[in-house]
Length: 285
Image (tube, rainbow, N blue to C red; front, top):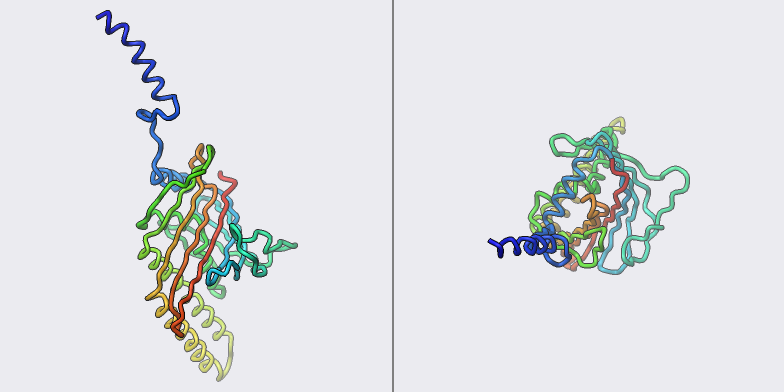
């Protein structure tokens, strides 16, 4: 009995050390990358309001140049209502560690356009006028929707080294077939939006030329649709996200991605394109 009494304080000290001393992880649970992602998704899903700023650029043939760049910003209100505001593309710039943040300068009023989306039953729908269907394609740059879709996909999540004490960085690679199907779905949505835009333009024409114009526009669209389907069918798609998460709040701070598509064009030449995005979250409420 006496020996047991003497051993009790030692065991208590040992337990205290196991819990508090760094490196003694028997009783200290360090979250897995999957758990960190799940908490980040839950955290952002529970917010009533937030803001973010982002930018997009297209890089071809690994030439280190970005084209078709534009910046955008978003504001979530009332939990399920999101507004995206874009600005027109800037000049082509050299690619360093990311998209040149000075490529587009905000002088006076924004030169792009805005679109509003509403989330119903887990799906985001564009609340745009019928004569502006192309704005619906902006939904592919909705970072909240991206995180929600990533959650349902086959993927590999790894912790990046050098995250620091205040953040954790996750590398999320989508399974190739999932990435390809996602890219094909996004392209199909955009082609449908283009067809709606063509139809809208044809409806503005009066007189005998209307039917001829409709036929010509549909022919152009069908050619584009057929070409897109042929190219994507044999394409290889690799999509990788990097998610920076606040250690204290478990909320996303930054979401960047690169989706690379390798395909063979109609001239049997190999092509490489990469869509790069970078979004910073702020003002959570």
